[in-house]
Image (tube, rainbow, N blue to C red; front, side, top):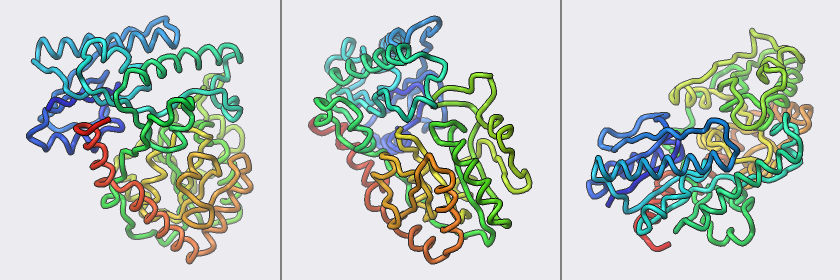
Length: 384
């Protein structure tokens, strides 16, 4: 069977599944992307495409992305003799829009991560340099691409219930909730550091992941816990939302707003997976904050590692974390409350141990990688 994965930045959400299927001699696995953002097995066929996205609207970007994908698929057929039986792709860039037009008999599985909406919580984080009408136009155009793909796909999946439920109601019943899985054997508890270590990780330091609120909270914590240190992993680039209007990064804005003690607040930048795991295993308290947006891998990985989690009382988190049961939740708009929950955890080792053990069990029960892989592989060969 020929199974083709489509994602602008492979492997993305398909990393574990690609690796698993590549070890099956009955599967001929190929990937199509703008560029590789990680490794894939040597026996996986890798081909790339380059959409022309200059001077386009949001809808035009999706159409050009989809066109580049379709033409690249035809090129794979002509040059590699590769015709997909199954296409498994991410819908977020419009990549899957034309797959059925070129390969109507292929089984098309769409990964639907997000449906744009005018959430009030996002006004200060997304589109800060656009008017409300410009925001509405952008959202309408992006969602037009998602709706087209929803109609085209044979199978539709979303990683969490909350993310599924941001899509229009008429489609929710056709979207299966299947997470890509967490490697609970890799992200397992390890030796804790004797010092007080607060950890925080984010793809980009930005308001969508509540970086300003986190910095405000740790200023309070550092004052009240003179021996604690803070480890922050991630980049300064804004990925989800708007950049500050003066061209600075959100990290630079925080330095100007209140600063931080460089002897106790350590910005690690991008770190390798092994270092990230070591960081989680050493963590005394791990902090994950987000607006109502897609749930990050890092929060589940931290729970799998047995971290004591302090997180935001927002819908995507509350699907996984129950306050006082497997983590502590705080109002994302209250740095004082976030700081209070962190300090409470730092002061109570028994609480940390109980919450960390319950957090790991939650991930094992609901997101364990072998279970999630089994369901995903059944999608490829089974009925819709």
